[in-house]
Image (cartoon, rainbow, N blue to C red; front, side, top):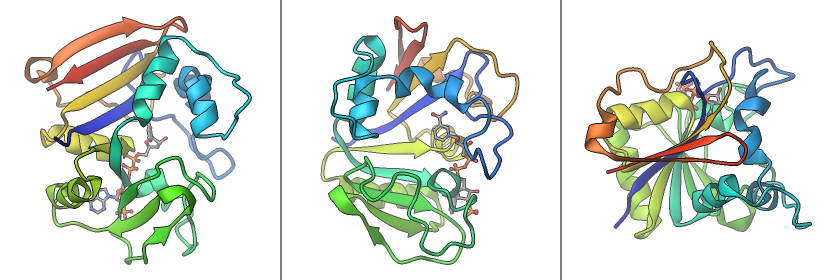
Length: 216
Ligand SMILES: NC(=O)c1ccc[n+]([C@@H]2O[C@H](COP(=O)([O-])OP(=O)(O)OC[C@H]3O[C@@H](n4cnc5c(N)ncnc54)[C@H](OP(=O)(O)O)[C@@H]3O)[C@@H](O)[C@H]2O)c1
């Protein structure tokens, strides 16, 4: 049965986005430190960067990175994560991930802006743009498209929080980087008691990253 999954990188003090994004540095100044353990894995390097040399870490962080890519049949993301807020005037913007994005599945991009035609990409990813009356509507469409596999809410923070606050998420995995950001967008606000509705498991990686999973 389809499960709704979220995987996010956060700081020890609970921030899931990096401060001060600029056109030159759209991910913001702290992004590298926030996601460094994940982007160092062999799986990220192979699946996202196309690096087939075998380089990258192979420990606990890599095991979670491998899990991240398994069993996803459709993805949902917000307009900012796709890049529509960074490139609002480019009708041909195709996301940050190049000609062959690493999703290999339909991706539903939430946006209030004028509808765009769907964009089929190499490797099986198709970006669809949706402005649903409620997030349950796009989740139903993504679930049908997933064909029994899971649906991931990829981000960004606002979209992930909307699904969490609506109680729609079965599996949340946070990679907690041992850093203190003291700024950015917080993940946890108003989610009191998530550890009661979901079972919690924690594991510390060689990098010092704490992997916490909440499973309904
Ligand atoms: N820590 C991590 O692992 C991680 C992962 C991914 C992203 N991020 C970070 O997350 C940040 C982006 O997150 P964000 O919260 O700013 O934005 P976001 O969730 O990516 O996108 C939010 C936007 O999506 C559109 N949207 C959301 N819900 C909608 C709905 N129900 N109907 C129609 N449109 C809807 C709206 O855009 P419009 O109204 O403009 O169309 C809204 O402003 C970035 O800083 C990124 O680095 C972090």
